[in-house]
Length: 573
Image 1 (cartoon, rainbow, N blue to C red):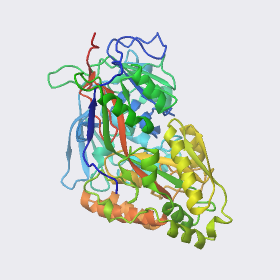
Image 2 (cartoon, rainbow, N blue to C red):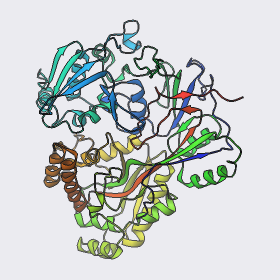
Image 3 (cartoon, rainbow, N blue to C red):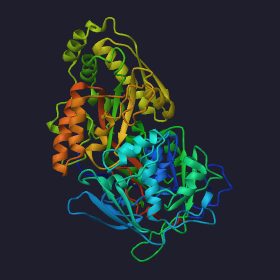
Image 4 (tube, one colour):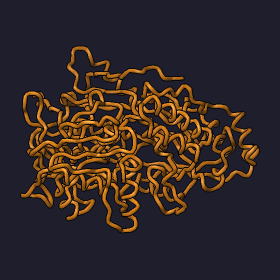
C-alpha cells in the first residue's frame, strides 16, 4: 500500500508569486459591489446548481451555503468537535433519545431580501418550520434522508402525509417556549449532532421562504449574499453586521468585510489566478503542476518570508466510478467484478495523479480517515488481470469478444477527470480487450444523466457530510429506491438495492455507540464490495494554496471552512 503518512502534512513555502491582492478590487470586473477593504477571494471550479440548504449536492454549494446560513450547532474547523451555534446549549435525556435545545436570545435572521428592514428574531417556531420543511416531499429536497428519515420520531409519517397533501404534525418535535424545544429520536443520538452541524440542516425563516421559496437566500450566518451582483459563477458575500458571533475578547465576528467566490473553468485557471494575486485561496492544485510548484518555491525559501501556504492532508473523500447496474452488461456482477480487478489503481496515482492521493482504494469505499473503522479487515479489489479475464469469460465475454462499447461520463472543470478516464480506458483495453469512450460534461448535466440511467459508467466522488463511515455508506442505502425510474433516490443515484446491505446499514445507523455501528458498517461495506456496483479508485489527499495573509484559517479533512473566524492581514507595502 502506498499510504505513507497518517498525519496532516503542511508545507509552508516562500513563493515567487506576488502577494494576494486585498483592498477594493473585485477581480471579476464588477464595480457595483461595495464589499469593504478586507476581502477574501476564492476560486472554485464546480458551478453550483443551488445554494439552498435542502438542495445542496456538492462541496462548493456547501462552502457557500455554510457562510450564509447557520444551524443549531457548528463544527469547530480546528478539531471537528461540535460547538454551539444558534442553540447555546442542549441536554440529552437519560435514555439518550430526547435532546432539549435552548436557543440564543436576540439572534435575528439577516436584514435582507424579504426581511429587509424587518429582520425577525429566531425562535423555536422557526426551527419547527425548518424541520417540517425538511420532512416535506417537494422537488429538490434531497436531505430528508440525511437529517430526519428513520431518525426523528414521526418524520417518516410526516413525509408520507406530505406526499398525499395531508396536514400532519411532526410528533418528535415539541415547542416548549420561544427559545426552548425538544427533538425525540427513534434511537440513540450517536452522530445526530454532527448531522445537525451540516449546512443542509440550517435554520430557515418561514416568511422569507414563503416569499421566494428556494430562491430566497436569507439565513442567520456570518455573511449575506449580495443578490444584485452575484451570478452563477460569481458569488459576492458581505459581512452580516448583526451576526451573533464574538471572539473570546468580545470582538464581533466576522473580521473581514466580504467574501468572493468565483467559479472558474478549471483548476489550472484557479492556479493561474492565484499566481497572479487574484485569489487568496484555491481548494485544489492541478496534480501535474504540484511538483513544479514545490520545487520552484523551495529554492527561494531561504531568507524570504512565506507568502502562501501549500496545505496537503488526507481528506474524508473517496473517488470512484459507478455502474448503470440495471442494463447490460453491468447487470452482471461478474462483469462488475472483472472491471474492478482489471484496474491498476497504483499506476493511476503514480502516473496521472503524480502521487496526489492518500492511497489506492483497494479496501473499499470508506477512506482510512476514521481511526475506529478498520478498513484493513475488508476484502476489496487490487490488480489481478487473470482473475479479471476469468470473470469476464464466465460472464459470457471470453477475451472481451461480444462486449459492447461502454459510454463513460465524467464531470468537467478538472482536467484530471479526463486524464484518469483516458488511463482507465487504456487499462481496460489492454487488460480485458473492452472499448470505453468517455465524455466530459458540466457536473449538473452529468448528474442528470446518472440519475436517469443514461450511459454505462459515471465518474463520482463523495465528501463526507459528517465525520462518520455512515455518510459514505448512505450513498448505496436502497430503502428509498422505488420501481419508478424517474424517482431520484439521492444520494443513491444509481438506485442500488441489496437487502443484506440495507440490513447491516440500518443496524449500524441505529446502533447505540460508535464501536457497534462500525462493526455493522464493516459488514455492510463487505456486502457492497462483493456486489461491486462501483469501482473504488483512490482516497483523496488534497492540496490547497492559501495566502499567508489569512490568519486563523483552519483546513480539515471534512472541507468545512468557517470564514467568520478568519482575519486578513494588511498587504505589505
